[in-house]
Every structure is written in C-alpha cells, then in structure tokens.
Length: 397
Ligand SMILES: *[C@@H]1O[C@H](CO)[C@@H](O)[C@H](O)[C@H]1NC(C)=O
Ligand SMILES: *[C@@H]1O[C@H](CO)[C@@H](O)[C@H](O)[C@H]1NC(C)=O
Ligand SMILES: *[C@@H]1O[C@H](CO)[C@@H](O)[C@H](O)[C@H]1NC(C)=O
Ligand SMILES: *[C@@H]1O[C@H](CO)[C@@H](O)[C@H](O)[C@H]1NC(C)=O
Ligand SMILES: *[C@@H]1O[C@H](CO)[C@@H](O)[C@H](O)[C@H]1NC(C)=O
Ligand SMILES: *[C@@H]1O[C@H](CO)[C@@H](O)[C@H](O)[C@H]1NC(C)=O
Image (cartoon, rainbow, N blue to C red):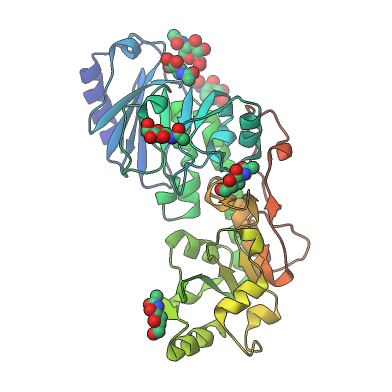
C-alpha cells in the first residue's frame, strides 16, 4: 500500500507540477471497505473508486493548483475542496444516503436534492425552510451549478461535477459504514469521519461479541424472504447474511438448495412451508406501495397457510419488517440511516433473536405484535440541521 501511495503521489505531483504549500493535515485510512482507497499528497488527495473506476482528484482551495487545474476525463475528475456547496441525488433507487452527510455535519452546504422523498428529519426541516432547492434530475443545467453533485448510479449520464457515492455496493455492514471516510475527504473532515467510524465499529463489535456468547446455547434460524407476484424468494444478499451471523443467528439459506417458491404450484408451496417450519425468525422484505397497510394478516395471506401450528416464528411472535422508519409511506430509512449506523440494525436484530422486551428497535417492527410504523417528519429534527448528528450507540458491556 505504501508503495502504491508513493507512486500515485509522485505521478500526480508531476501531472500537476505542484509544489507543496499547505499540509493536508489529518488523514483517513480505509480499514474494512474494499471499493475505495484514499491517497494523500501535499496539496491534494486522491480517492480511487473501483466501482466507477475513477480517480477523484481533490485539490485544496487555497492552492494555486485549484484555480489552474481541471480534470474531467473518463478516468480522472477534479474537485476543489472543501466543497463550497453540493447537491445529492435522492431520487434514484437506492438514492445517495443523506445520513452520512449528517453525521459529518455537512447539511449546511447542501443546496439541492432531486426529490424530497427522504427519511432524514433534519433534511426535511431544511427543505420546509426553503434552504434547499429541489432540482430537476433530467435538467443538466440545474445539476451543474453545484461544486459537486453526488450520485449513486454509475449508468447516469455524467457531468464533470458528478461524484459517485455508493456505500451499498459493499458486502458487509461495517464496510458500508466506512464510506463516511470517503465523504470526509471532500470536506477536510477526516478527523470527524474517523471518530464516527471508530465509535460505530466499536459498538458494532461489542454487540457482536455479546451476541456470540448468547448464541453459544441457542442460535435462532433466520430467513429473509420476499413475495412478488405469486412467488416467495429467499434473499441471499451478503450483508444481510452477515447481520444474522453477527447478531448470533443462523441463516436458513445454508440448508436450502433453492431460492424461489411459486405458491400456485402445490409441490413448491409444500416445500416452502416445510422450510418455514424450521425457521425461528422471519424478516419479510416484501416491497409494497404503502407500508402502513402491511400487517400480519397480509403476511399470512401471502404465505398461504391453513394450519399455522408448525411455525415457531408465529408461536413466538417473531415476524419482522425493516420499514419501521418511513416518510410519506414510501421512503424507507433502511436504505439511508441504517447504512451509516449498522450498530443500530445489529441492536434491533439482537433484540429480535434474544428478546429482552425492554429495547425499542429503530428500523425493524414486529408484525406478529402488530407494531406499526414511525412516520418521519421535519418536526422530529431536534438539532440545527447544519450541526453534526451524533451516532446513537446501543447499550453494550
Ligand atoms: C489532527 O487531529 C488531531 C485531533 O483533532 C489534532 O490534535 C491535530 O492537531 C491534527 N493534526 C493536524 C496536522 O491537523
Ligand atoms: C477555502 O475553504 C474554506 C473553508 O470552506 C473557506 O473558509 C475559504 O474561504 C476558502 N478559500 C478560498 C481561497 O476559497
Ligand atoms: C425536467 O427537465 C426536463 C429536461 O429539461 C424537462 O423535459 C422536464 O419537463 C422537467 N421537469 C419538470 C418537472 O420541470
Ligand atoms: C456553488 O459554488 C460554486 C463555487 O464553488 C459557485 O460558483 C456556485 O455559484 C455555487 N452554487 C450555488 C447554487 O450556491
Ligand atoms: C407460478 O405458477 C403458475 C402455475 O403454474 C404460473 O401460471 C405462473 O406463471 C407462475 N409464476 C411465475 C412468476 O413463474
Ligand atoms: C407523498 O407521496 C405522494 C405520492 O408519491 C405525493 O403525491 C405527495 O405529494 C407526498 N406528500 C408529501 C407530504 O410529501
């Protein structure tokens, strides 16, 4: 790594013809994430993003290079930092998670979003107060007025000020959360980014250890399933499997050989029910237009059973959905806040797997206990929007 760092710096030093003038100061090091790397020169930094294959060359605003140099090629894009303003694409699915910007205290410089279908209380408050414009995603002229426009989709037609931010590409919860360092680099906020990540990781690891000792005597079997047009699917996304392991559970997928079950086919239905009979905890991911209307009755109708007696997850009331925190029935915070604060997701799952009854979950609601949603709105913002949001740590010895 040292060797690559040296080479990249040397190459850029030559490209830019820059003489060192200002020290970059504190740095971030990537420990867990696999899709980006950060390199430091004297007056600039480079993020190598291996999802879009681009090098982001970030030049300090108080250097001569900042006014002289502009890169916008297939391989290199340059930005002057710290960003004086920026916009984010909140419309794509999944959109850019806003919560990372909040943890760094960057909402003050956010000037545009492409949709107000977001799950951040404080962003909603800023929008209501007129501090942030809703810009038309299809209108390039509107998007290029910002120093940077953060996007989550690599297929998007790319203007020079577009920067990709895609934590959800990573395979584990901590790797996803570590993308806070990627943003920190754009804002010279490395110290804050490191601090948040360290706190999140420490809390996450503490919970993992607690779960590991709990699960020595009993490991609940967990299935993530979703229903679409008559077919049930077992999901096998890596980060979800990792959450189950880290919370002390066992993934059902290790023992089944098929992922799809068509409930109109009697054999399929029979097999699906047989597998469900071995499951202790169900996480129903079925996507719907209106989460508020999805109840235990909906779930039971979809799994199509007459006799519920063999299902441990019903007897023990363990049927969950991750749509507890939503805005306007549609935007789900699972795709935003849960990515930057995986310790809260782990805390929820730990409670689902080893219930204490005195822990209030953040992202998951228990259908079997008829738990409803929490509707996120601007009135719930309890700080100045531009102030940094503190990570919430789960009690853990
Ligand atoms: C790095 O951060 C630490 C803690 O905030 C601070 O004490 C130190 O002065 C910083 N170093 C530089 C070079 O900015
Ligand atoms: C550089 O950015 C800092 C922090 O945003 C700002 O205070 C300063 O005025 C900027 N300097 C220039 C030359 O733009
Ligand atoms: C957004 O911009 C596109 C392209 O310029 C235009 O066709 C469309 O009507 C605009 N939409 C709105 C809601 O203004
Ligand atoms: C954003 O900052 C750039 C300079 O970095 C400035 O030219 C532009 O007018 C600003 N845009 C907005 C919408 O504030
Ligand atoms: C499920 O099975 C029924 C009956 O065989 C069939 O008509 C339907 O197309 C199947 N659905 C899917 C999504 O394959
Ligand atoms: C809620 O969503 C609907 C449909 O997407 C939209 O028409 C409505 O304006 C939204 N309401 C608010 C308060 O955002």
